Each structure stands twice: as structure tokens, then as C-alpha cells.
Length: 195
Image (tube, rainbow, N blue to C red; front, side, top):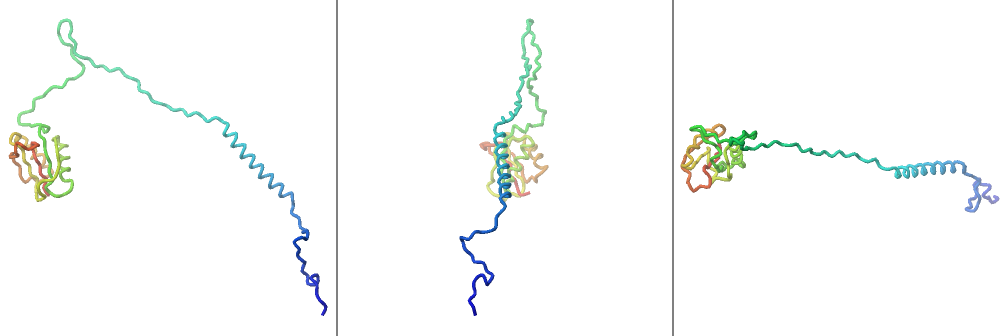
């Protein structure tokens, strides 16, 4: 059998040095580069033109207060020696009605005898809302109190009934007395119970 050559098999020989016969269309490459350059130049032009424009100034409105004259008349003595009436009211003391005590004249310590966290602060807030002066809050000597206990100094016993009435609206009163020691820091002690 005769020897076969590569031409007989139908295969082309591959040589890295052989010239290829296929050509890419160069027109497509030039069009693609031209479009890319066009976009690039447009982008750079927009950036440069945008940077050269001056930014618009913001208008900031600052409110200003216009001073208004105030009228503050004072008493002045007329040539006749009579006082002119004043337009500004002056505080006047009003006498308390007999049997009515002012709540601000009593300093109260509210102590927690229930063991419930915040119970003394709750009662203190209620008393302050009623017009009393609560000077301190804290814990009682124990947490075994079932009802509210009120103790007032004997010198302030006129407040006892009013304090008892005010507290009984929201709390159960267990005891109320005017036997608080005169050396106590406050005029009254209210111990909060569990009820």
C-alpha cells in the first residue's frame, strides 16, 4: 500500500508561520472606536462645563427679633403728694379662711413600707399634685405595712385631717396621728402600705 500524505487525508497542515487567509472588517473597528471617543469627549465636556458654572447662592432667611417697648409704670408722687395708681399689679396677702390650712406649709417625707418598687414616688407625685411639699422619699424601716400610715408633728396637727382626706381618695388609711417627734426633719411622714 502506498504511503499517504497529509494532502490525501484532507487535513490542512498547521503552521504557526503560515498566513491566514481570513480578514476582519476594519470598518467596524473604526466605527466602534469613533463612538467610544465621542462618548468620552461628551462626558469630559459636560464635566468641565459643569465645573466652570458658579454655584447658585442659597438664600438664608434669618429671623430677627424686633424689640417692642414695654410699659412698666411705677408709682410716682404728684405735686399734691397723692400716689398715682400703677398699671402693674402688686401681690396682696389674703387671709386664709378659718379652718382651712395651706398645704404648702407642711413638709412631708414619703416612705415605702410596701416593698413595691416606686410606691413612695407614686404617692409623692400624688401629694405634690395636690399642692403639698414632699421633701424626701425612701424606704420605711420594714416592708410589712398593709395600709397607709400618717404621722404629723403635734405643732402641725391642723394638717392631719386634710392630709388624711386627700390620701383616702386613692389609698386605704390604716393609722393617722399627731405624734411625730418634734426633732424630725419633716413635719409629716407618710408610710405607703400594700393596699
